[in-house]
Image 1 (cartoon, helix red, strand yellow):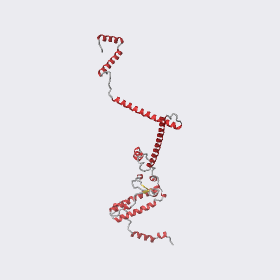
Image 2 (cartoon, one colour):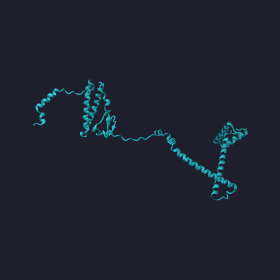
Image 3 (spheres, helix red, strand yellow):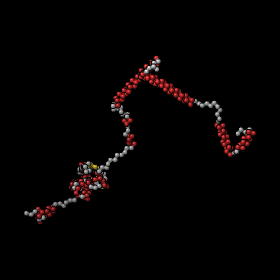
Image 4 (cartoon, one colour):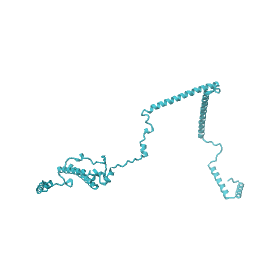
Amino acid sequence: MARNEEKAQSMLNRFITMKQDEKRKPRERRPYLASECRDLADADRWRGEILREIGVKVAEIQNEGLGEHRLRDLNDEINKLLRERGHWERRILELGGRDYSRSSNAALMTDLDGNIVAIPNPSGRGPGYRYFGAAKKLPGVRELFDKPPEVRKRRTRYEIHKRINAGYYGYYDDEDGVLEPLEAAAEKRMRDEVVTEWHRVEKVRREAMKNVVSGEVAAAGGRGGETAREVLIEEVEEEVEEERRLEEEKMERERGEEAGREFIAHVPLPDEKEIERMVLEKKKKELLSKYTSDTLQGEQKEAKEMLNVQR
């Protein structure tokens, strides 16, 4: 019995195959431009054919053993078919057909981990260029999917002050209701301590005053006498400080009043012309002493006295 290959090569089988091919219509080629198509059904058919070609090439590009050049060519062909699919979808819409752009997936690309990434213009190929399958691992492409490390920008002084509000200065501390009871307890404790100390000092002061009146302070001994003596000394110091403060305030007030009074001269004062004459006379004397001898100055003085000249 002959094998199948031999049967296919027989004269009868080749003749039958030739007759079947003659009965078939010649295979129609897809138009180069989508605008050349005038029939909506043909446009849908060509779009379906493009989708099948895309599926075949996407399945083929998953093989990492094809080599770098073959993977790049396949990726370019897939992107070309995607653009062509878009042209046919717009043509179908112009012919009154379905709007496939709403239902089709957007041009979203995922990285090796499956996360959606946006690469607006990788490697200068224009917007919308996508990578599929093993093409994502090619040298120069993997770096496009790596996220650059986030550089922490140093905040400016303006940004720091912009975030500061009243709470930064403690104005909101009373609104939460936590600080108020704590402050109330601390205030009550401090007030009680002050009142207790005042009562103690007042009691000691009264006892000391009684002892002073009766003359028993000097003779009193022990801790009670020392405490009474300290209280009396503190009272005396306070009185002395008060008198000193009042005296200083009085002196300051008197100085201010004296400064505000008008100055009255009790001796005759020279006017401006007299002052100018005295200055001019002094300058003349300095010039004469500088450029004339003592003999000449004496003769000039005797001449003035003889002539009764004052100047």
